[in-house]
Length: 395
Ligand code: GDP
Ligand code: MN
Image 1 (cartoon, rainbow, N blue to C red):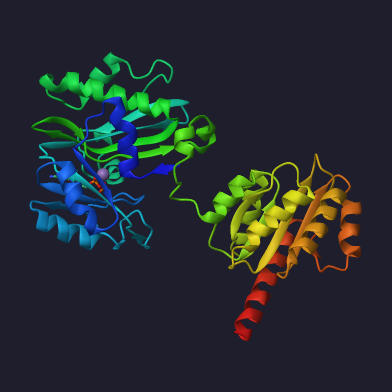
Image 2 (image 1 turned 60 degrees about the vertical axis):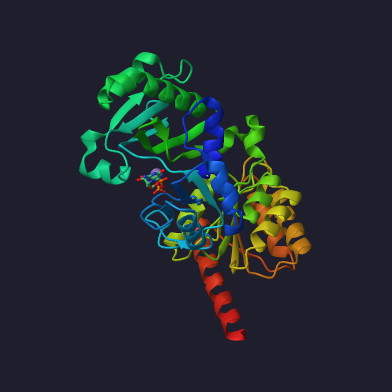
């Protein structure tokens, strides 16, 4: 799950990570005077709260010396469509802004912790050249990026943090402060099962080190042991994805028009690739899981069909634990229940596949059967195209 800057900062604060004075988050300019008071005397900084970096350059972060400037900044940022280098050409609408006391920045460093998958451990990635986009730095000056893997059980040790401080050329009188901060960040990273914790910039100010920005991503698979996080709104998932999660179905909405229902994540990925190869676009990733029984298949159809972009459905199920005739019966019952109107292509493979196919063929419901996945993908692409044209002509 990805957290907004202010949510990440709320998690960091109790661990002693030094942060600018916060005036809280506001959704309208009406709340600004109180927020400014909470943040203390100016200058202030008004920050768009969206899940994308590069807000500063895109006009989503503004410094304000006076209350009038803060008001103008809040008014211009709230409701704006923020387009940054991370929003893939589209914008994100800004619904809330964070109000903070502005810091006087003397120097910026980049500090992050992520998972080194090859090393199977967390790793600190840091650079004395902060402020700049780390992606750009990695391309142009990779030697300026430091990496320090550490033991997830022991945490970041003092000597490791000191070595980082030395490599980042942190002045001697500030090393103690830096060590404390780096260790606190490592603790948060481990405690919340993060996949990324990024502080960019970590700023040197006359009052000490400050985490000016914070980006935090946690591993969804560990959400069960973080009740306090699970309760928070997942800003990235759609309502459909939340509904699927409740039904214990792995579903991710995509931008194509072929709904997919598959058992197994690997097979689902392969199915999506094959659809693309056949010239189509999947409308979703959907893994119904091991037991593709009538109830789950019905739920899956219901979820797929709530996406109005879906012009055809491709069911690709391997009968390993469950037998194909049971799956076929489940599909037919589910199709009846949801009164399916879009074309349905089914590819079954595995135990009792012949009985399964006979069941589908003998049904009065219109189900297009496919021999193999390539055949299925081509038929689904064709069906979606025909259905799209029909709809186009009717409207
Ligand atoms: P991002 O652009 O989305 O990564 O947002 P940041 O929170 O990192 O802010 C972008 C830039 O705005 C920072 O790199 C700073 O240069 C500047 N900035 C943010 N907060 C402050 C502040 O309190 N004081 C000053 N002077 N600059 C700030
Ligand atoms: Mn930043």
